[in-house]
Length: 596
Image (cartoon, rainbow, N blue to C red; front, side, top):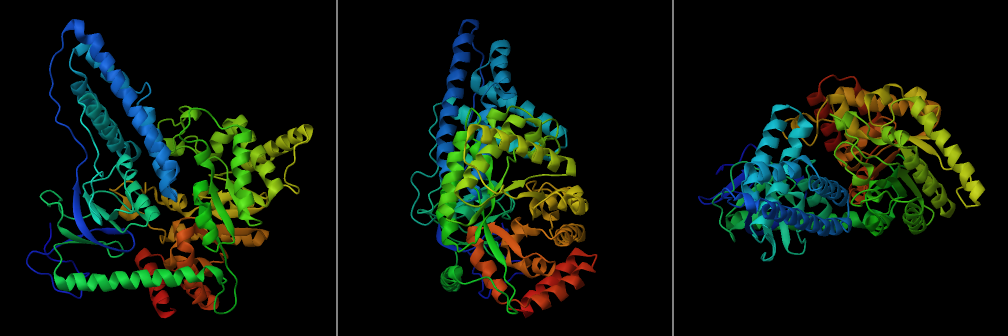
């Protein structure tokens, strides 16, 4: 715990009982409320032997606890499907993973075996089995597995609570303007947050790409993660301020501090209202260059927000929601109905549909286990679709049929080689012939087929890919992750994740220039597309199409309208001559400061 601020000093002096915690701001805004310390719901577990004739009843008690946990998570999954933004997708993936752990997994089998062989109570068996799994994962020194440890512990806590009949309602009696302070928030916990009651949140653990950060941004709650100090001993009801832009948490703020942040919050809300008014004006630079701004769409429930943002279309529909949180694969008809409704609501604006991008941490029970020892490098995305042609063909058929009602585009994720593109085009020909035989209406002409550039191999082979693609979409999140060999969700290396690394910028430049040479369009649809800090650089590199969360469109549009494209291009050339990320950041920030 720190009583002194770091070098980011406020314009107000702290008083004796004012405490300032420093962290990473991951969701902008100012929250002024009262502290609500949150624990993870751990329950003290006794261990005792059970009689031989009680083993079967103890195993049955554990089976009941597993069934109850599955029902509880199903309810949370239903709630997650109604959330807007990437929070719904992120939460859906994690809750689906929880369900997988409750269905014949090593955890469930191991607990049952311990009860039978060691003759200990089920609660203790859960604790022992989780301990063994966690130690095994930690010994593998694998970032992906390490990130799953907390998920396993969360499932274990839920099982223990069910076994001990311990109620868990962490946010049921929150005061108005509650500020959640926690060591960490699980996906199940964040699903219970009510933005009408909660003013903001701060956690000791987590990074900008953690589920807590994603949920906070989706719900519009100011949030700080990676908070210094400890939360133990903080009393409920203590006045607290969250500065989600600067990464500050202030307990017991003085009157001067409160006055300062009330003004800052009012200014933030005023600017947000001004940005909202930009939705009806075009995204045009000072020197007359028109820029296309599209929205990324996670779930159908977001479509009204997308339409209200003033975007020109959907540059990325993540179709995984069709496959998650269900025991079976969606049929062609089910997919068609969802996509058709979206196309009709867009009313002539284009819908770009990314084909199934399962793999890595995106679990879909109906797809079975295909992860291998390293899921991120195994059969994700287009590799899985080509391995399972029945899945790809059903999805392509649904997209083609939806295209009969309005403009659609097909976007292929994680492409590495021309062969993959050609294989998809061959599958598309098969689907077209089938639809013709069925006398079913479909898009005419056929939708454009685009390639996602999100691995270094694709960027370096962009010239070859461009000749077989109708458009490019650069996914900078994965491109940065794979280029720098950094898991952006791993707290131990998250600080190394840097889209301004020279290697990442070179790959973006390679892909953009290849698209321009082939005279196909190229967009950026990663997180940097929605951050005004990067707008001038991306435009200077030749990008004229950006796709982002709908909530970011007004801020990016404002930056574009205050930007001279010729000057941005000159600055991009200077930046591309640099080899140091720090210098690149300084050059970009200096340009942004001098150009409005």
